[in-house]
Image 1: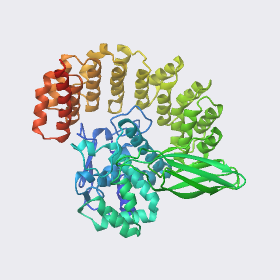
Image 2: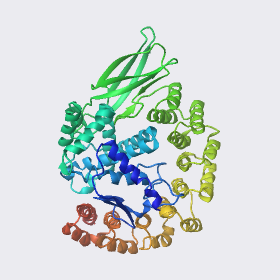
Image 3: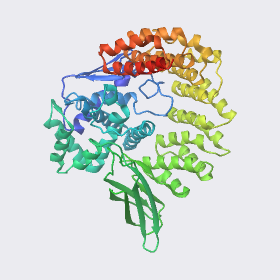
Image 4: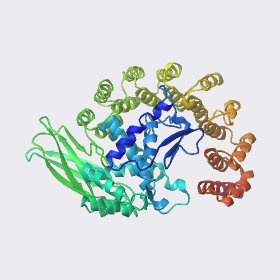
Length: 582
């Protein structure tokens, strides 16, 4: 277990040198605590971690609780450790003046954990981290339709301002973009100056802006207006024509995001990479209008025109291309551009032999592990007679992240052969993370799981009981009410809070009218571990437990925890709506 902390001293040295500011405290300790109320929390000189940070060599890289929907998450154990350490510069030394500016703590710690990945694993890992953060943010905005600045003053409870997708992940990507805008030398010089100027004091966003401007000589009003006190992001529609007589590329960039209060037009520098048969080169352009046009030199017909191929921008980029250019981009661009090209091939040309051959090439000759993992997941979208054979081959590779990605892709493969491959993964794969994901994917395919199958899997030992959690997720997905006698015991105190939470959710989805569930949730709402208490308050509202209105109102009145009172208020409103309809 202690080996997970083996790189901490190197992290301390790296952050000290990167910001020319030595670790400011006399010691640093780390402790792992069962059922810690939050995943991890730094306190000056010591960090508490949930005990899932401890792991053997067979555990996944991710911190937890387990996620079975993507092959890698932003929160590896290593990232979590470096994130909490990073707060000792940004958060404990420089502390935001009020909660509205918590991005000065959390966005910075989230970007510093990516900087540690860059130092320890290389630049492509940093690019992957930023793109994964951007994907989480864009997916969240797409589902929730939220436009919100980093410095955010309109919230009823802390959970809103601690929103992972905005405050942590988008904020980290914004800092990466600022690094691109300023360049490495000015960016890190500015942050070092910010640390020295405001050490051991409270800070606001304006303090950061002024410190950066003083150290770099750059006016950053525009950047902070767009990305700190302004919200949203640009949606770029990009296209080009090649003019052979003039030997020019006519590049068109449109901004098509809604122009609403809080989100207008964005002004940004963009790197455009042009590859021709004889050379590859990069030009920097400045976008800022609703529709911009740029004439870029090209002595030959371009093999590729890549718009922000290195993934420096916080933006949704839509750049449709023909399949030959996508093939070239998927095998020659920087990592973010390669992944974008692979995705477009699988989405727009799923039946093309070129798409299949490109994905096969990336799987067998990857430039980086994430190229292969992305290709493995996209295989599930590819319509080719050889797809299943290539998936089966991928399920035998050494990197568990590629196998997990292939399992995720199997959700879309509509054959009995796919189910047999998933069952074989459950039986034989050496990674509990891959096994657990296969169980969840089987459930999403509506594969019937009988009691004997589930009992056998739930009895298997795994890191943080993730196979048990996967089985509970599967029961929830299948709405398997007949499994409730087995589910109920996992809601008990002898299991970790992630297992208990999964059991309660499965119970609520499969048997919302069960009196035993109502009693269990009522008891947890009044007194339970914080994670489960919040879950119970929320579920009492969704299952229509009208007999618990008085308990929920008491929680509202106590006002001891704003997250609890906000959850109780929402549940009470839902229950009163149900009661008034009778």
